[in-house]
Length: 174
Image (cartoon, rainbow, N blue to C red; front, side):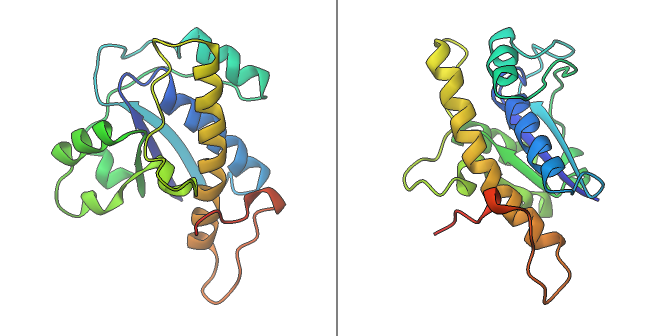
């Protein structure tokens, strides 16, 4: 089982949105039995809370379900438990580098690395913004999620075979 962890600040907006998007992409690709997707926050002030209602609503409109989500804080143990630890922005990446130990640092990457958009490093925080900010987060994580799925599928594919994940998940790396 390949395990993916998305991380933002409070685990109520960006990372649960990315979790829901990738979970759906994984399901659509027929990889649910081989890939587990979770999320966490660098800070613990929302632990146990549901996803932000605006994230829930915008995600629902696109067919993603965040209703069961409960926020949790990332821990150093996550670096041994997960194969991918994906930061939503460079600030999270720096915080995670402080938490990670040893080889776990090699599992850490930025979400937008998979987005194929030159110069776009961060998924911006929509918390203090409006509806358009939550839509932008969805747009970015859907795009990067497809690139991440291609990476996961290639990693899961038997050596010497081409990974097939559906027409919408073509690699976006350049």
